[in-house]
Image 1: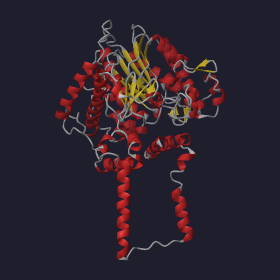
Image 2 (image 1 turned 120 degrees about the horizontal axis):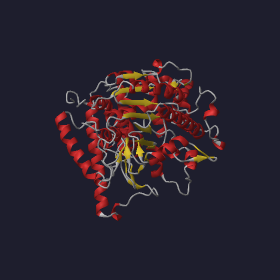
Image 3 (image 1 turned 90 degrees about the vertical axis):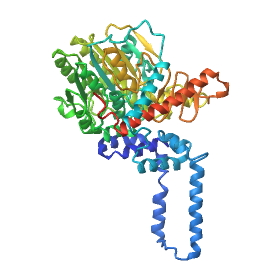
Image 4 (image 1 turned 60 degrees about the vertical axis):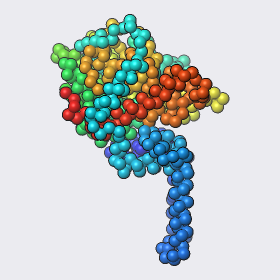
Amino acid sequence: MHQILYLLCKLGNLQYTNEIITAIPSLLKFRQILYFIDFPIILGFLISKKIEVKKVKDFKKKPVIVMAIVIMVLCTYYHFIPESLELVTGFIYSKENSVKYGTIYGYHLVDVVNAVTNNKGTKYDSYDDMLVAYKEFKEKQDELARKDLTSYKFKGIASEKNVIVLQLESVQNFVVNKTINGKEITPNLNKFLKENVNIANMHSTSYTTTADSEHSVITSLYPLENGEAFSKYYGNTYDDIFKNFKDAGYYTMYAHGNYADFWNRKNVTSKLDIDETKFLEDFDDTSELIGTYLSDELLYKQTIEDFKVAVEKGKPVFYNIVAASSHKPFKLEGIKDKYSKVSIDIGDLKGTELGYYLEAINYTDYAFGIFIDLLKENNIYDDTVIVVFGDHYGMQMYDENLIKFLGYDKSNYNDARMQYEFSNVLCGMKIPEFENVKIESPVSKNDIKPTLAQLCGVEDTFSIGKSMFERDSYITINNGKIITREYLFDGGLWYRLDNGEKLDFNSLDEKTKERLIVYEEETIKELDISNSVIVNNLLQNNMN
């Protein structure tokens, strides 16, 4: 069901027709058509039989209609509300749970509630009220922070160094250090992670779009559903990452290998403190396109030239680059000499979505290798902080080939772990003159902005996230799910990540119980704060 809901969500964004059409074949399954096939059948039957629908004029028939309506309402009540109407607000963050626990009736009821209220189900209407909650939340974050990294002094260790934030399309973490038929899928990324900071437990802040990932990285806030923060609230004022670095004396840049109007990026970036912005129509060489995206190879070759010119101006440079070659449907159509750049043999997976995905990721890695080599050749690698990460999932969670590829079968299938893998994306960081470190605590996209601010000694006034070097508790996805080192909370119940079993709270020690309860409470707080800030534009007139 989640696949068809995702597809419908995609179809709602009609302004992105070309990109959506290319994704539909890989999302649509025959069994999903069965959800709708009854409507044309019934319509055809009515037309063929020429059944006449008459108005009910007989007063005696009205009680029958009233009774039918009452029964329908009771059925809806029974299916949607197993306990009470309070569940409506409980599902406001998670349509998946509104289907799971409240059936399809609950899903549509939440949609109706949001439509009627214009999605204004926010807790804080004023900046002052929100700020009180925000300060309390940040104090709690500090209480939960790591205390065992005293050997590192993170504040300002990369002050005035160049910064590159590189977002890769659909690169999940399960491909890291993975081989197929004897060859590494991501040899260049593996090398980068081994030599630098391997952030092994990075998670998306939502299950939706590239724009949502960008939103969290730029603002350190949770995205609204399916790119809405970019499309509807682009004019908001945020304490964004470009503003932070611009105020600290950086020259700021942004590049994306697609057209400026895709996901409303032209309007979004025009509101940010960006000195130089570049989209597909601005590049000189567009001879290699994958759909409507510039190939990663051409993107990197041209952005490195721009980066080199900017560095020569004398200011440190902050550059946000968004790559897109591994976008669904993953077939790399348009790549020249494809198999001189794709080095893996997918064998039996040929013609499957997973096979196409692995080839696309292998090409992404090939281009990333070129990117790193060009930085080194131009003598700007050593003096640059580099953060590289996947924007969101690529493979559907319950793809049968993926389940097998990850080593699961019917005897050992672990749904909690699959949900973890679904949101777990690749992430690594290079910090000049900093030794190799592996971060295994769960972190999220919201943490990138405060982490870079800490490293570069840049002021960060408002972030939901926490420095990745200090976080050691939990992360949240915008649908209310929680991930810790050991457990997953699906919005209703806790599960063990090691075996997928439902957690028995009675068997837990009091300290663990209290910790998990705190995580649930803090999750609601941070989602309330983030959603209120976006929907009500609460930072407007309150950011210096």
